[in-house]
Image 1 (cartoon, rainbow, N blue to C red):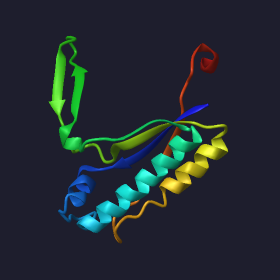
Image 2: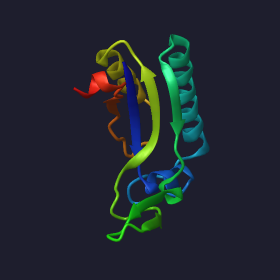
Image 3: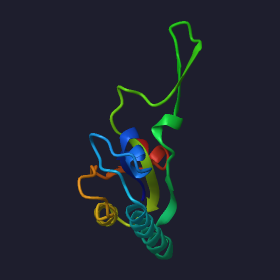
Length: 138
C-alpha cells in the first residue's frame, strides 16, 4: 500500500529556519539546520535502502505559493501567498510503499524524532493512504 506522509509548517517556521526569530519560534542556527538535514538525509537513505521510498520532497516557503480559483462568473482568480487565514501548510512529504499502516506509523514516529531547537513548534505527522484505483474507491 502507498501512503502520503506529510509534515506541516507555517511561514513563521520558514522564517525561523532562515535565522529570524518570531513569536512562535526561536531563530534556527546553522547547527540546527545541519542536524535537521542530517537526520532527514539518514531517514531518506534508510527508506530508499528498504525499498519503501517512492518520493520525498521539502517544499518552498508559503510566501512562494500561488492559489488558483475561479469567481462566480468562472474567471480565474490568482492569489500569491502567504495567506493570513491559513495556519499550517504542507512543508514536506514522502510517498512511501509500506507493508502495513503499522509500518508507516513507525516511520512517522521516527520523523517526529527530528531534532529542532528548544521552543520551536512540533507539528503532528499526517499519514494518508493513497488510493490506487477503482478498487480502492469502494
